[in-house]
Amino acid sequence: MADLHAACVDLPPADETARMAIAAREATLTKPAGSLGRLEELTAWLGAWQGRAVPTLERVRIVIFAGNHGVVRQGVSPWPASVTAQMVGNFAAGGAAINQLARVADASLTVVPMADLAPTEDFTVAPAMTTPAFLHAVTTGYATVDAETDLLCVGEMGIGNTTAAAALAAALFGGSGRDWAGRGAGLDADGVAHKAVVIDRALAQHEAYRDDPLMAARIFGGYEMAAMLGAVLAARHRRIPVLLDGFVCSAAAAPLRRLHATGLAHTRLSHRSAEAAHHALARYMGVEPLLDLGLRLGEASGAALAVPLLRAALACHTGMASFADAGVSERT
Image 1 (cartoon, rainbow, N blue to C red):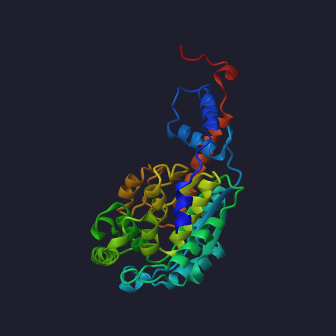
Image 2: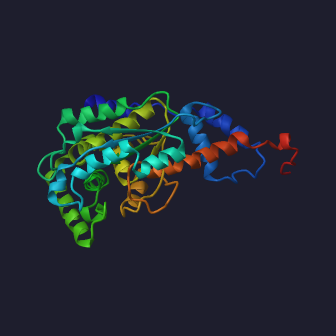
């Protein structure tokens, strides 16, 4: 755990030379300065983390980690845990939403079942993962990140994981189960209230560890969430820009923000999910969503939808003419 902590705080910076080169070209393009809004910032962000004055999106990779959660035994989901394995099979068969979205985004798709889909411990009575299991999951996620990647999209599948995400968010940023519990995969109002009680019970059980972000991730998270943490960390070490998905993915990456003020500088939040607490979590993490489409699916669906937006930003930057080339008068 000490080695992991060190890896989370020893983080390389972006390439500011590449960022400045992109800004210099942006200033010559046939448009008023700043008129493409966040598209301009996204191009600069891509180039700064790729270390390229001309960014590229030739190798976009989507990685989904799947895992099961022991806290499902507390009745926090209307779906049985067996759905996780069934959906992994659906991914393999090409029948899920993310299969279609990955194709539209022109991105490769990898699905990684964690711990053979065995559930974590029920974190209302014991830490979700032992230290070796947690570190193995983080290492597995770290190892999935190919250094030859231009953009990484991270997502998950796991029945019960919005409960884990809510508990982890509460441990990292404060508040109660009522502040963080949401509908997840379709709970009614009574189900959400019960979920909040379960989270509060877990927070009380592990109160002593709430100030340690990595310990909180081990106690309240899941195998797939630990793997996402590892993947996002690997991307930072390899200077690969990352699109985060929704509530669960954001919570999984949040320990990096707690451990380092710029721990998530290489990431962008693809969308604000319909899970009620995601807006608050994004604010605590200091990230602004690119899209707001009412999604609450997971599977990296929001991240995949944001890829064409990045492609559009890059196309404008690389394809537009300069004032000089187009013979357009510049502002006096």
